Length: 251
Length: 305
Image 1 (cartoon, rainbow over the protein chains, first blue to last red):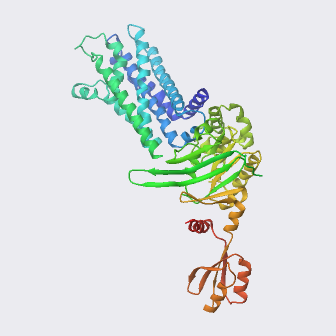
Image 2 (cartoon, chains in turn red, blue):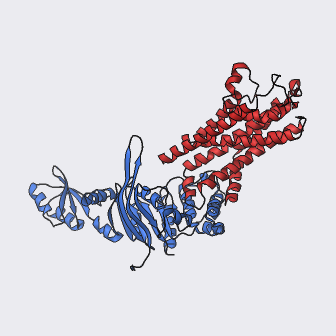
Image 3 (spheres, rainbow over the protein chains, first blue to last red):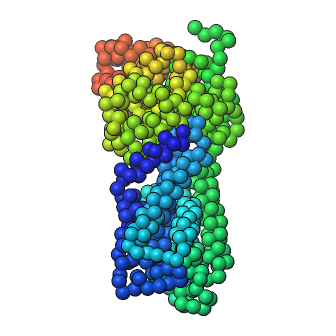
């Protein structure tokens, strides 16, 4: 039951060129642009080079944004009456959400894989192979936090354009989450409280953990990004539940 | 014909639904008792806002009643829906614009566990020719046909249609009912909500009239038709004497509205009455009109109180 639905979902999203560009091509293009500036990208940082650092950042951004976009359609589709149509079948709302999550996770995985493949092809490197795997898995798992954010916004505003805004806001979160360019001083202190900070810090941790505390580009102690990720996971989950209840009550 | 041991397709008891928002409280359904036998074709007739859609939603388990109970084929709405024994054409939404027609049908068929019926149902509802078209590019009538196909997928015993012909032109509407007739002859129970008196008359053996969340009349469609079959005859009459003579024409005649010498009469036999008015009483500017559905509702609602 779920398999057929997922297959059709993919067909839909891939027919819609817009989603495809944002989910797959944009992060890849951004890595390609910023990751290949010869003046600094081959410089060493932690256990790898700047290219690897940028690759992880762009992959994390791309995975999170595509998750928001796809998970958010759960909400807009439910509100458009598709939820009523599904309610007249054997499929439970839970498996509807599950199949959407599988689609979102798959697109996020493809998006991050594309950036990682580009990175591997253009000289991103780290000392140990396991860092590729661990960073990639952290990106995938962490991206799912933003699914709740997408569902919440969709349920609250019930429109496609709100979902576009939610994706747009992710750019802001990314800038303020230390994803695109390294922040310093007060900005960095404030950044620690924004949703993408912990996520991307955790994804970079494997390559940066070897830098001694106090050194240039040294990562925060592990508990800071972990706390950030857990806290935002809880906040977004509660937000999704709250928005869903509110939307159901108005029906 | 009806026998006592026919099973009940739908049974509603003391059904109420109140929607509460912080500012307002809307009583959409205010105490509905209804029992529909298996195999019947029933029209749920009423103006917009009568509570038809809310009632249908409660039969389908899409909305929880504030009080009262719903049974469909002796089961709870949820069980009846998940077992595929009841299905519906919903009034609003229900389709995703960027799916193709075949994708939509296939997806819902799989959710019913009826993937094998896709081709058959598409052929029967005439969708095979537009299988690859996106739903958003289909006309209103075609979208209604897609919804109808979705409702047929589980091969239901009870089929509920909420304003099934909304957005269809005259031709599409006729084709739709043509199609429904063949579905009905296969023994399904069909309940449809409509605000077209004509559709109830042409298609339903029984009509349930709803107004302001209550049932105001319920009976064989033929009887209902008689109930609202009177005519309104309006004419301008020359004298007071002529007016009282007209009023005394027969027992069915009564004055509905008076505006100086211009009088609107209600009567049963409008042809004979009109003739008398014109030839014997010197009336002019004569108009005969059938009561609109709204008129019938006003009358029936007043009668019910």
